[in-house]
Image (cartoon, rainbow, N blue to C red; front, side):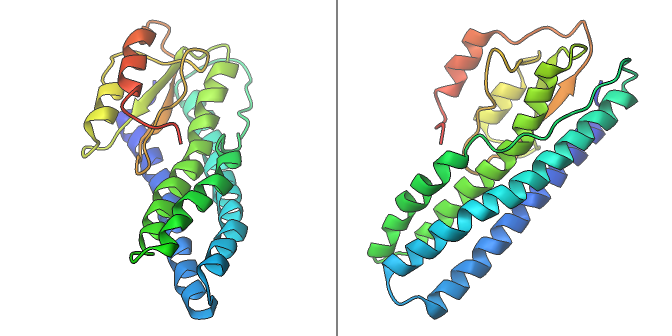
Length: 212
Protein backbone atom coordinates (compact mmCIF):
# COMPACT_ATOMS: atom_id res chain seq x y z
CA UNK A 1 0.00 0.00 0.00
CA UNK A 2 1.26 3.48 -0.90
CA UNK A 3 1.52 5.65 2.21
CA UNK A 4 -0.41 8.91 2.37
CA UNK A 5 2.86 10.82 2.68
CA UNK A 6 4.38 9.17 -0.40
CA UNK A 7 1.20 9.75 -2.39
CA UNK A 8 1.13 13.44 -1.52
CA UNK A 9 4.84 13.81 -2.28
CA UNK A 10 4.22 12.35 -5.73
CA UNK A 11 1.24 14.63 -6.29
CA UNK A 12 3.34 17.64 -5.32
CA UNK A 13 6.06 16.57 -7.76
CA UNK A 14 3.46 16.52 -10.52
CA UNK A 15 2.24 19.97 -9.45
CA UNK A 16 5.86 21.11 -9.77
CA UNK A 17 5.86 20.07 -13.42
CA UNK A 18 2.67 22.04 -13.96
CA UNK A 19 4.36 25.10 -12.46
CA UNK A 20 7.12 24.78 -15.07
CA UNK A 21 4.53 24.54 -17.85
CA UNK A 22 2.83 27.72 -16.67
CA UNK A 23 6.19 29.47 -16.35
CA UNK A 24 7.01 28.68 -19.98
CA UNK A 25 3.58 29.79 -21.15
CA UNK A 26 3.96 33.08 -19.28
CA UNK A 27 7.35 33.67 -20.89
CA UNK A 28 6.05 32.83 -24.34
CA UNK A 29 3.09 35.15 -23.84
CA UNK A 30 5.42 38.03 -22.95
CA UNK A 31 7.64 37.31 -25.94
CA UNK A 32 4.89 37.13 -28.53
CA UNK A 33 3.49 40.51 -27.55
CA UNK A 34 6.91 42.01 -28.18
CA UNK A 35 7.38 40.45 -31.61
CA UNK A 36 3.91 39.57 -32.90
CA UNK A 37 2.04 42.14 -34.97
CA UNK A 38 -1.36 40.48 -35.33
CA UNK A 39 -3.72 38.09 -33.55
CA UNK A 40 -3.09 35.59 -36.34
CA UNK A 41 0.64 35.68 -35.66
CA UNK A 42 0.13 35.19 -31.92
CA UNK A 43 -2.18 32.26 -32.57
CA UNK A 44 0.26 30.64 -34.98
CA UNK A 45 3.17 30.95 -32.56
CA UNK A 46 1.21 29.15 -29.86
CA UNK A 47 0.07 26.52 -32.37
CA UNK A 48 3.76 25.85 -32.98
CA UNK A 49 4.97 25.89 -29.37
CA UNK A 50 2.23 24.44 -27.17
CA UNK A 51 2.36 20.92 -28.70
CA UNK A 52 6.08 20.88 -27.91
CA UNK A 53 5.39 21.85 -24.29
CA UNK A 54 2.84 19.06 -23.92
CA UNK A 55 5.26 16.56 -25.44
CA UNK A 56 8.28 17.67 -23.40
CA UNK A 57 6.68 18.06 -19.99
CA UNK A 58 4.31 15.17 -20.58
CA UNK A 59 7.34 12.94 -21.05
CA UNK A 60 8.88 14.28 -17.84
CA UNK A 61 5.65 13.61 -15.95
CA UNK A 62 5.30 10.12 -17.42
CA UNK A 63 8.90 9.12 -16.67
CA UNK A 64 8.58 10.37 -13.10
CA UNK A 65 5.35 8.42 -12.68
CA UNK A 66 6.86 5.20 -14.08
CA UNK A 67 9.85 5.42 -11.74
CA UNK A 68 7.59 6.18 -8.77
CA UNK A 69 5.36 3.21 -9.63
CA UNK A 70 8.31 0.83 -9.49
CA UNK A 71 9.62 2.32 -6.25
CA UNK A 72 6.22 2.03 -4.57
CA UNK A 73 5.75 -1.51 -5.84
CA UNK A 74 9.03 -2.58 -4.27
CA UNK A 75 8.29 -0.68 -1.05
CA UNK A 76 4.93 -2.47 -0.82
CA UNK A 77 6.68 -5.84 -0.92
CA UNK A 78 5.04 -6.95 -4.14
CA UNK A 79 6.78 -9.99 -5.60
CA UNK A 80 7.71 -10.67 -9.21
CA UNK A 81 9.49 -8.55 -11.77
CA UNK A 82 7.64 -5.67 -13.38
CA UNK A 83 8.87 -2.76 -15.50
CA UNK A 84 6.57 0.26 -15.60
CA UNK A 85 6.28 1.98 -18.96
CA UNK A 86 5.83 5.75 -19.42
CA UNK A 87 2.66 6.65 -21.31
CA UNK A 88 2.24 9.72 -23.50
CA UNK A 89 -0.55 12.18 -22.80
CA UNK A 90 -3.84 10.91 -24.21
CA UNK A 91 -4.68 14.52 -25.13
CA UNK A 92 -1.97 15.11 -27.71
CA UNK A 93 -4.48 15.27 -30.56
CA UNK A 94 -6.53 17.80 -28.60
CA UNK A 95 -3.74 20.39 -28.35
CA UNK A 96 -4.24 22.13 -31.70
CA UNK A 97 -8.03 22.45 -31.37
CA UNK A 98 -7.58 23.76 -27.84
CA UNK A 99 -5.12 26.45 -28.94
CA UNK A 100 -7.42 27.52 -31.76
CA UNK A 101 -10.36 27.66 -29.38
CA UNK A 102 -8.59 29.75 -26.73
CA UNK A 103 -7.09 31.97 -29.42
CA UNK A 104 -10.54 33.34 -30.11
CA UNK A 105 -9.90 35.72 -27.22
CA UNK A 106 -7.25 37.49 -29.31
CA UNK A 107 -10.01 39.15 -31.33
CA UNK A 108 -11.75 40.50 -28.20
CA UNK A 109 -11.04 43.38 -25.79
CA UNK A 110 -9.59 40.83 -23.31
CA UNK A 111 -6.94 38.83 -25.23
CA UNK A 112 -5.28 37.82 -21.95
CA UNK A 113 -8.06 35.30 -21.35
CA UNK A 114 -6.32 33.15 -23.96
CA UNK A 115 -3.43 32.66 -21.56
CA UNK A 116 -5.79 31.64 -18.76
CA UNK A 117 -7.33 28.98 -20.96
CA UNK A 118 -3.95 27.81 -22.22
CA UNK A 119 -2.64 27.30 -18.69
CA UNK A 120 -5.63 25.25 -17.60
CA UNK A 121 -5.74 22.95 -20.61
CA UNK A 122 -1.99 22.59 -21.19
CA UNK A 123 -1.44 21.74 -17.54
CA UNK A 124 -4.22 19.17 -17.70
CA UNK A 125 -2.81 17.58 -20.84
CA UNK A 126 0.69 17.34 -19.34
CA UNK A 127 -0.45 15.83 -16.04
CA UNK A 128 -2.62 13.39 -17.97
CA UNK A 129 0.59 11.65 -19.05
CA UNK A 130 1.46 10.89 -15.42
CA UNK A 131 -2.07 9.79 -14.63
CA UNK A 132 -2.19 7.56 -17.71
CA UNK A 133 1.17 6.07 -16.77
CA UNK A 134 -0.11 5.08 -13.33
CA UNK A 135 -3.49 3.81 -14.47
CA UNK A 136 -2.12 1.92 -17.48
CA UNK A 137 0.66 0.23 -15.53
CA UNK A 138 -1.78 -0.64 -12.78
CA UNK A 139 -3.82 -2.41 -15.42
CA UNK A 140 -0.68 -4.11 -16.82
CA UNK A 141 0.59 -5.28 -13.44
CA UNK A 142 -1.04 -8.64 -12.61
CA UNK A 143 -0.43 -8.02 -8.91
CA UNK A 144 -2.18 -4.64 -8.81
CA UNK A 145 -5.73 -4.31 -7.57
CA UNK A 146 -6.43 -0.89 -9.07
CA UNK A 147 -5.65 2.78 -8.47
CA UNK A 148 -6.86 5.49 -6.13
CA UNK A 149 -7.34 9.21 -6.66
CA UNK A 150 -5.06 11.42 -4.55
CA UNK A 151 -6.34 14.92 -3.81
CA UNK A 152 -5.08 17.98 -2.00
CA UNK A 153 -6.69 19.40 1.14
CA UNK A 154 -8.16 22.16 -1.04
CA UNK A 155 -9.57 19.88 -3.73
CA UNK A 156 -12.93 20.78 -5.23
CA UNK A 157 -16.14 18.92 -4.44
CA UNK A 158 -15.94 16.93 -7.69
CA UNK A 159 -12.42 15.63 -6.94
CA UNK A 160 -13.24 14.89 -3.30
CA UNK A 161 -16.29 12.91 -4.38
CA UNK A 162 -14.26 10.73 -6.74
CA UNK A 163 -11.47 10.24 -4.19
CA UNK A 164 -13.94 9.43 -1.43
CA UNK A 165 -15.53 6.39 -3.03
CA UNK A 166 -13.60 4.17 -0.62
CA UNK A 167 -12.32 1.75 -3.22
CA UNK A 168 -10.10 1.42 -6.26
CA UNK A 169 -10.65 2.19 -9.91
CA UNK A 170 -9.36 0.14 -12.83
CA UNK A 171 -8.21 1.18 -16.27
CA UNK A 172 -10.72 -1.20 -17.79
CA UNK A 173 -13.69 0.45 -16.07
CA UNK A 174 -13.00 4.22 -16.08
CA UNK A 175 -10.56 6.92 -17.18
CA UNK A 176 -9.07 9.55 -14.85
CA UNK A 177 -11.61 12.36 -15.11
CA UNK A 178 -10.32 15.86 -14.39
CA UNK A 179 -11.09 19.52 -14.92
CA UNK A 180 -8.70 22.14 -16.21
CA UNK A 181 -6.97 23.18 -13.00
CA UNK A 182 -7.11 19.74 -11.36
CA UNK A 183 -3.93 18.77 -9.49
CA UNK A 184 -5.04 15.30 -8.40
CA UNK A 185 -2.84 12.26 -8.97
CA UNK A 186 -3.34 8.52 -9.27
CA UNK A 187 -1.69 6.02 -6.93
CA UNK A 188 -1.54 2.25 -7.48
CA UNK A 189 -3.01 -0.17 -4.96
CA UNK A 190 -1.78 -3.73 -4.47
CA UNK A 191 -3.92 -4.66 -1.46
CA UNK A 192 -5.93 -7.71 -2.61
CA UNK A 193 -8.73 -6.83 -0.20
CA UNK A 194 -9.34 -3.40 -1.81
CA UNK A 195 -12.88 -3.19 -3.18
CA UNK A 196 -13.55 -1.73 -6.66
CA UNK A 197 -15.50 1.51 -6.99
CA UNK A 198 -19.05 1.16 -8.24
CA UNK A 199 -18.82 2.29 -11.86
CA UNK A 200 -22.39 3.64 -11.90
CA UNK A 201 -21.53 6.01 -9.04
CA UNK A 202 -18.41 7.11 -10.88
CA UNK A 203 -20.31 7.90 -14.07
CA UNK A 204 -22.83 9.95 -12.13
CA UNK A 205 -20.02 12.09 -10.72
CA UNK A 206 -18.06 12.45 -13.94
CA UNK A 207 -20.97 14.23 -15.64
CA UNK A 208 -19.89 17.35 -13.77
CA UNK A 209 -16.63 17.68 -15.68
CA UNK A 210 -15.56 18.13 -19.30
CA UNK A 211 -13.45 15.61 -21.14
CA UNK A 212 -11.25 18.19 -22.79
